[in-house]
Image 1: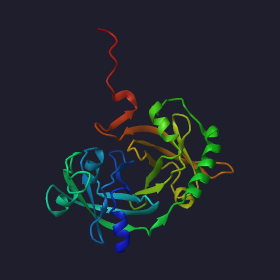
Image 2: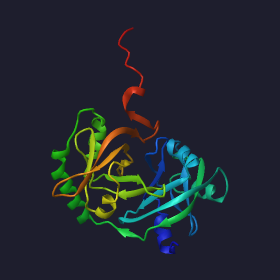
Image 3: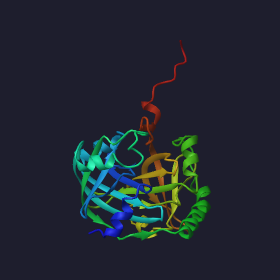
Amino acid sequence: MLSEEDRSLMCSDSKIGLLATIDDDGFPHITFISSIQPHGSRKLTAGQFCAGLSKRFIRERNKVGFLIFSPQMDIWRGRAGYEKTLCSGPEYEAYNKKPMFRYNSYFGFGAIHYFDLIDISAREKLTMGKIISGALKTGVLKPFHASSVRGALNHMSKDMFSQVDGLKFVSYIDADGYPVLIPAIQAANAGSDRIIFSFNPYGRDLAAIPDQADVAVLFVNLKMESVLVKGSYSKGKGLIPCGFVEINRVYNSMPPQPGYIYPRENHHPRVVDF
């Protein structure tokens, strides 16, 4: 199913890897996991060194989507089914001998997750011309769709989504119950309560997202900063085809303590009376 050349490129330690799972409320949940790679021609593995929600989600709902983005801007996307997790064995040893872990300069991998490969796209190439064109169109749209009533994104999250060199990806659940991942690098925040993106590039894929679908959008950059938003998707009306997400949850996906940061009802109240 995968060529030897593709497998070699997908095993690069400098790639971007994403895993899309399904959360307790049926929303997609996107995890940045650069350790994902092929295992033979019909399986995938992913090493775990940080415990977030996605590790529980894959055990409880085994349908996942994945995306691999190489430094050469090659992209592979597909679907897989969770098989097992092991804390020993040849793959465990191989992961922990990777250059960044072999001298214990970081925490090593504590577990290796295995997936059966359901399907995978042919290698796709994303070009800077397409990204710039899409970002310019998104910039034109932003003022007409801005909303900042609830303040869902804090200052840091807004700064992340406004970075033109940041990577963004959107996910929804397909008719077969698998999360689908689509590059949406042209996406940006429109105020604090919405994410908007033009349908360029990947217009056909983005236009296929059902109206009012539950979606997730992940921002990640090369400094490993990331934030995940979830909400309801709508198609924009006008001369420039687009979609936007009304944010109802924000998830901090960065260590040391991943967790939801919006809504804020679950946060501890500020102490004002001693």
